[in-house]
Length: 247
Image (cartoon, rainbow, N blue to C red; front, side, top):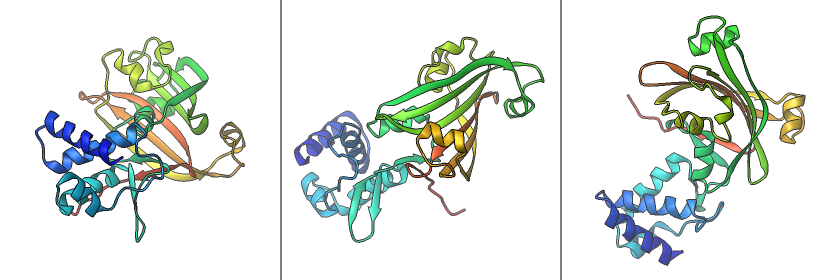
């Protein structure tokens, strides 16, 4: 791993004009995404990384701290720094489920449970800022990685935004990108709930298992709402992290 990390650090330094901690941060992320650093694997101590790369420990600590904030690494008091074992989502970045899993070196998949078109319900009309009766495309999906069911998602999109619902394969954002559409911000509401019997069956869990429920409304630059998604994540497999700053 040392030779790989050294070579990747040098490649990043040659390719980008940036502070050294950013080169190391990119090199470590590259190693995680390509499986050189596996899930649960411990990083070398800061002093060893500093000696290997000719950096100060402050620089190494700053690079590692950034990846901890992104959820790719976990620090355990007295034990060291490890590649995160759970799927960790940073709440400060607008990314899709597929983006999150690919960043962890996993291959996201979807099982389409329902796909349809219909008049917006009152809840959908309010969330998407639509007039009553406007048509929306609806998707109910089981999201998986490495054959493991991780989440259920119910998404509603204005039909004017995605006139052909069959464009959606695995990633909603990739389907929108095919039409030149990319959300630039989102509002999310999170709360803890329990899976009902049907949700638990689809995820292979006991009824009443813990669930992270997330409601997302995604917007374009011009303020239009293009996505209303209700996601139900396994509480035993998903973490959300947020970096907070003093006012």
